[in-house]
Image 1 (tube, rainbow, N blue to C red):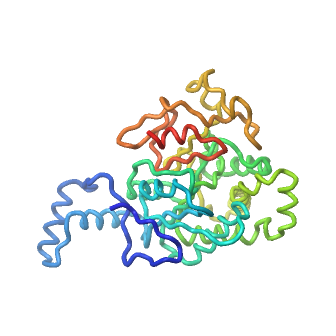
Image 2: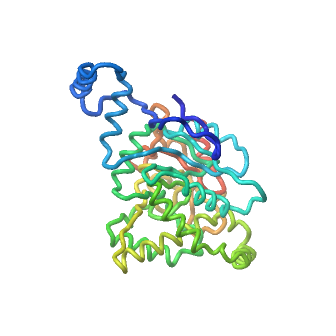
Length: 350
């Protein structure tokens, strides 16, 4: 069944809804599934049907307990993409919002922080941007397998450009130290992007509590002064600014003080795929025909030439699931971040 759209504050489902399975396969082989059938029949009624047995088998194979699964977005207004995201999400969708004047992505950061105070420690929560993300036809169980493959309680989406530029010096150093800790610090996509995060409830709560306690917005006059200086577009990137600040603090504490590293960057875009590329990283694919930027010019607050309009022929589509020619995997989600989204819109329409 399609995952329901659930508004925060509304009734919660009576039972956990399993991630959508796109392929009815027997993960342990036909023999194992048949053996489970025989075991259920020998145990007597009530009998489980094949789907229930398969779901139970899938859940039992994870290295840690999963109490709940949710995909959570923040939306300050209604947007047509919410319907598409709900239809294509591998997890049930919860929409957060709050009343009052929009204050930029500070609202989203605080909404996530507040929401996490009510989730179970063992819940798996996925945060994505509400207006420019859709699912790529990958099942919920496959997404969980990919998440567990990182062996970290938090996985953050990664892009090819450092944004905003205010964090560049510290961000570059933190990514280098992340490599010293065993992370991939050389992939094209090695920089934090706030548009996609997945993790356990307890770990995400710890991360967002740290951001809430240390955020610049606790001193509103400083935040407003900075926005007045750089342009109020900065308020649209504020959550990413604070996520970068957390990444720097956390990685430095792990590197310098030996604290446990709780996060990983999705540098291979196993979960969170981006349709925005640094032109220099893919010259062999883009060639001279793709100018990059907005009509060949840099976009706001970006020093490297980005490609927002990658040609559609560079995306291979099979069964409503797309893969970029320069990467090995089909991500779980496609994210079209940035001020211009022709590549993302082209994929969505296809």
